Amino acid sequence: MKTEKIGIVGSGLIGRAWSMLFTSAGYQVMLYDILPDQLSAALEYIDIELHRLEEHGLLRGHLTAEQQFKCLRTTSDLKELSRKAIFIQECIPERIEWKRSLYQQLDDILEEQTIVSSSTSTFMPSLFTEGLRHCHNMLVSHPLNPPYYIPLVEIVPAPWTSPQAVEFTRQLMLEIQQKPVTLKREVLGFATNRIQYAIINEIWHLVDKDILTVRDIDTVMNEGLGLRYAFLGPMETAHLNAEGIRDYIQRFGGEIHKVSETYDAIPKMEPGPTLDKIAEQCEEMVPRDMLAARRKERDAFLTKLSALKKEFEK
Ligand code: NAI
Image (cartoon, rainbow, N blue to C red; front, side, top):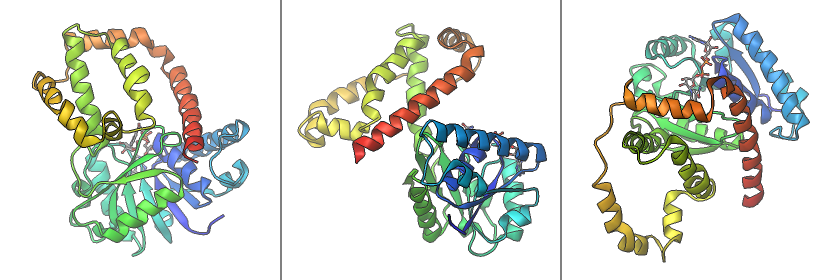
């Protein structure tokens, strides 16, 4: 077990997952929330979850569930949370005015060594750290849900984040067995959502024009492209699908351009007939009262997949 302290602000879905990731590496984790009930619910959830993972042989790290749980404390005092913390992972709801107010409060009490990183999915770090005294120690480390099973973390610095804070965060993510990628500078949507939204835009049009159903599109991904992507990214795929990437572009670059020229304009995603069609087909695939059960299946699958990947990468 380690003696260093990590603070988690916000004990909802993502705060709980980060807590488990940091305790899996033996860090002393302190959870803070404005709602005391959320803190006790988080402790109860994490206790059950750690033991469930242990029972199924899926617990991360070398410590037992009990040892990991013992690394966890809670507080309702932000000052206590930040005292002697080396790192704080912020996980409060996605409301910019709430984030700004929290970072302002933290700025008044932070110690010099503490790095604060946000889990935000959508806000560039400059939006809520500009002008703060400790802005050089503030950035984003954006996980994908569920973080315990999907290891990617996007590290996004603000223009004023120090290279040391970025590197510290990257090393910490590696230490807890996550897979960080570091953006050289902030950009709206970071990397994952920029790519994901390009896919969703095209799907919107394909369903709108009755070319494919939602289920067929998901099959294109989970029985086709996605199988490759769990192992190779699109660029390595291209590199291997010809005699190297130059050959690939020479052979297929013209075709890619020709197809791309037929893409429609970026759709406005709003209520209307296209959304009705998409929603109806999604709900046929997974009725709304089955969402929780399907999430469980997803987690079980991702766990097995990540174990398989680890074995393969040995
Ligand atoms: P959540 O709603 O499950 O949990 C938020 C928690 O923060 C609640 O326990 C709430 O009581 C607490 N809270 C609210 N204001 C607070 C404050 N000022 N100080 C301390 N605690 C406060 O939210 P969730 O889903 O965990 O999201 C947290 C962050 O993680 C958001 O920025 C979100 O964009 C990001 N994120 C969420 C993902 C998801 O799939 N849910 C995926 C990746 C990132």
